[in-house]
Length: 295
Image (tube, rainbow, N blue to C red; front, side, top):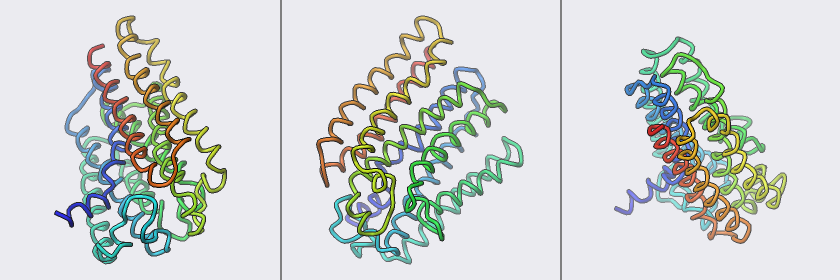
């Protein structure tokens, strides 16, 4: 049981709503437009989750190699750093998960054009490049940009494309919304770890710009994420528009409360906020999906 808990922490399950949300909102829009295809939708979901798990595992492995994670760190326990997981074991689990993600991704080629293979390769490389390689993105202030692109723009637009064989302006707006919410999850992580990252030479955006600006960005991102979907609201019927306002109001209320906690918490007290930010993101997309299903 202890070993299972250690691996659950390594998978960072509390952050998985970031990858799940992008697929959910794309599927909801496809359903609303009458072009949903369940098999490729499920494959997109599995691929997105596996790709994020690969990124999470690789992040722990390469942060360990670079000495970025230390015993007794402020954030959640890292099994390989604490000696609970052997580095080679973590490496091979990461590789096997990457292979599984690629296998699922290849299944999507039956439902889309050949260039999806190229996109899949880029996604796989990006999952590793976040922490690995000669220029790891998370060490050079590019972590948020990577999350915005690969957990917002890419999954939402491609999941919808695989359903409909087309791209759509509303879907692009939705992908921006999800991307901004995903960025907020990473902002909380980097906000908490700022001192540890400075000691490790890890130049996250919070290290570069400071906590005050990071907290301001967190607040603005949430409001922009909701308001950018206004073109969707105006296309719906009056009843549906009011229905879709429910997830917006609920999310903004939770988001504002989370921002307040962010500004008034430090260290380990920020750990629950990481999961809370991800859950708020998933709650918004789930409620929006229900609203679109009822529209």
